[in-house]
Image (cartoon, rainbow, N blue to C red; front, top):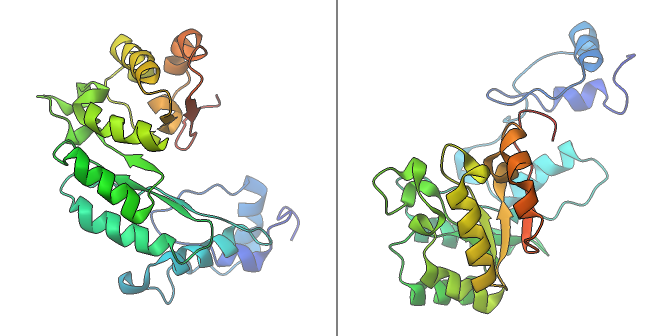
Length: 232
């Protein structure tokens, strides 16, 4: 089928599911329309009960044939979340894959001593805080330390942990408060590594372009680029 490139009709047929994002090239999609047999194949044989790390690795084999994938797991911070149970489940799952690593969901209500104990017990390599846990009237406009408290950062600095961080505020990374907080916190906690998710919530490029001159001076920042709506 001309247009499939490295994708075969068989491999495309095994990657179909509802509520997924289509990333097929147009020529591949047209070729599949001519010769493929559409069905909801991605979840065939799967149930909620067995959606484990083994399931993820099965999907990775389909998505990345011939490649070895080592998962870096970021548990999802549900708004009404039993964070402790979720963290424990995620920690047990990553133990089944050599080299896999996991962050823990944190919220401001957790005592720092408990966070320290959980990091050591489960060997978490970082935190996954989220803005809607903020101690602020409007969590959408919260400052970083409204939902990622400094006692937790003191623990993170001790172990050199990663902060998988979703920024709040309408201007995202370009908001003066976010830039000032990152500059201050990276100086105060130099062993913490900051992973700013979704290009520091810069879905279009303009916020990160405005912030770039100040961000370049911070050596402990990394950026994750999922969900960007335009080329960066």
